[in-house]
Length: 319
Length: 284
Image 1 (tube, chains in turn green, blue):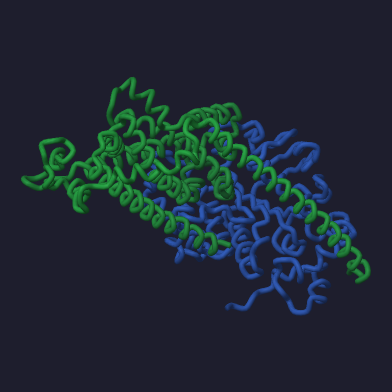
Image 2 (cartoon, rainbow over the protein chains, first blue to last red):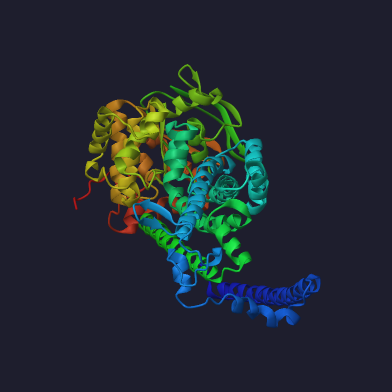
């Protein structure tokens, strides 16, 4: 048993040390804040300096773009969106909304931009699935707790790094040269980047996984594949799916951007209508993109909450 | 017959197990006791080869266990089932499948991955669960069970391996006294009826005394005692646990998983003679 005097002096020492630690922590926080402020103002100045037009000089022209974007009447963007004929139709491409309708059965058609949006979503979905599958396999080889071979692990990790080092748009530029314009190079580019990005997130999940089930299976005499499948996959799957959904959200945006540089889909339509000055079409596309991205994000957030929530619930029970 | 010949294990500069030489005939129930850090866990893991020995040899009959590799090593691990303090089940999979996983080594990987277990295998798994009196939870997720139930599932999985030996690493350290007794009774019963060797790490003297005819004491990586419960005198216990540790080792009413038997003072006294865990418990 501790005598009270002894414990009191011990408390004093702890208190003094705590104070000392807190003081130095505060000091470092201030240092960091000052350094951050200097860095931010310098980089803002640098960006402004290296830009052709000076930020403050050009600021008043910001709204010119929005003025140019105003359609002839309020109903024009909806007409452009749903491919309904325009009263302003003059034979020019600008007001030719029905052009590009995709007829499904008889008179029933899919408006052009909906079709293009589906094309973009399809690029995102296919590339997410391929990236997910390959990232899934590679992550177990990259995780230190599942692969004790240092060289193989090193190789896989560097490989994943290389894949995610290049932005989708750079890979797309390369594949556009090889496969010419269209959805295939876009899919390849997004899928390749996805392998690298998901592979890294996945192996970090695997490395943080509880190893007790795996140890139990090793002691049973299970081989590596069986250990991965039964010991690891059940516990990492909610996180994997959650990351996969998050990646799908990102890939919808990436596919749109790649579309703008020739990868097909809605991005291509957007770029064309902006450069040609088709204001109603531009507004229609931006609106469609906006709604689609919100719907995709909300849906994936809902699913992820369900997944991770369920996991939290299970962990609570196991504890 | 399991033979350990000067088996050692180092982790960096620390020696976890040092020159351990033991012979364990088939069918024995052996308790290994000692303070935490004495090397009990490392020793058991080396026998199952979850950890590779740094030196020495382990033999089982004609098999040179310490030299096994690849699929031969995995089939040894099937023969030498292991039970853990934290159960080490797959919490998100149902109990029946967890038990079936004990068969992994004896079947085709592809059909295992697809979950294609035969009706006969399922019946065997259910029999194992019934034997441990937990068949009613067969379709629940393992993670939703209590600790005592999970440990019984782990024993059922071990039985599913058709093992020649069961190693139990602190099987009751995370359990309440009632479940501890059920688990230890099950191990004892398996040892008796099947003649399977059971080697059990325990941290309480009285449990070891009550269940094991042979007790091995370890201290600082060395085997310092090997004999019957009757030979385990207070002096020997003092050597095992050290002068300070002895008090902890005996004041089991506070720290241990043994069954409470009234006044703590009484329990402490009785720990020197008969383990209180052997006493029957009232149902409910």
